[in-house]
Structure formats: structure tokens, C-alpha cells
Length: 218
Ligand SMILES: [Zn+2]
Image (cartoon, rainbow, N blue to C red):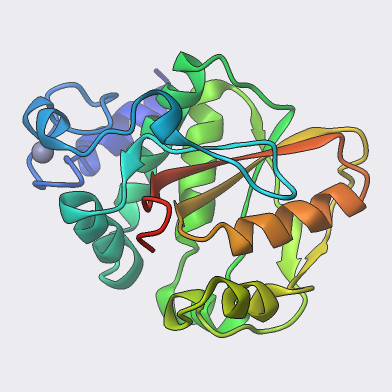
């Protein structure tokens, strides 16, 4: 562990994102007590498939404490949650033997980025990349503003809302990209972002999110 990181840990000791208690093991994504009670997605339950990405891996189901922690992270300035969420994804990818050439993330629209002060997907992706020793690269920008997909009910409305929402801003030719977001619901946003990366010449796109809704329950 680097000296800088140790100092950061002293100034901002890592807390469990679910119960806010200090972590005994600063590298653990969350405390042992919470880990036991979380809705883990094992085996095939933790894998989703999409039209433009091969698979999406998620360690946890989006409900209960997991949902609350993500909402806190997005709307109450809990930016320190990026580290444990990213570590949890990294652990899951490692466990499943999944790797990539670069890690990237779903960008926020300019207005939402300004309001929030950070992009939660970027913080998660950077933490995940660091844990796996893979470079984190911004590859996408919003080509236009979209409505928040969570305000739309049907899968087809979400699909058309995000159509052509992204443009690629980095060279991704021939790379196996890993695309990170906080939650997968219908997969419309990740699918559209993956489509843009593939059109720019990437070899493949896989996705990873901290949590996943159960199919049919989004
Ligand atoms: Zn806890």
C-alpha cells in the first residue's frame, strides 16, 4: 500500500457503505455483518445478457439495503462509496475469471454531473480498475441530454430515450472493454453505450454493475 493511500485512509477511514461503521479491514468492500445479510447474486443469477454486450456481471441484487446505499451514493453526496462498490465488482470479476483491456463507465449528462459534483459510475469504475490493475479510461460522452431512464416505465420507452445518446471520445479499436455502471435495470443504457463502443471498433464489450434488478422487476 502506498504512503499516500495510508494517509488517505487515516484522514478518511473506510466505512461500510451499508451501516457506516468503520471497516476493520480497509480493503474489504463492506463489513462482515452486512456482507452476511446482503442479497447476493450467485451463479447465473449474477449474469445478464444484452444485445450489444456479451454479459453483465453484478454481485448484488438491487433491493433493500443495497438499493438504499446506491440512492445515498447518488443523491446524498456519499462519494466515498465508490471505493467499496468498485472493490465488490472487482472481487466478483476476479472470482469469475473475467478480464478486460480497459475499464470505462457510463457518463452523466453535464447538468447532472454539475448538480452531483461527481459521476458515481466513474468512481466505481476507477476503484474497480485500481483493484484489478487495469487502466480506467473515459471513452464515452453524452451526445445529447436524455431524461432519467428511471422515470420511464416501459423497456421500449427506455430504449428510445437512450438511442444515440453516446459518442466515443477515445481510441477503442480492437480492445476488450469493460463498461461499468452502478445498477443495471432493463440494460437499455448499457446496451446503447456498448453499441457505440463496438461501432468505434472495439473487439468486445462486457459490463459490470454493483447491483442488478431481477429481470421483470425493474
Ligand atoms: Zn456494515
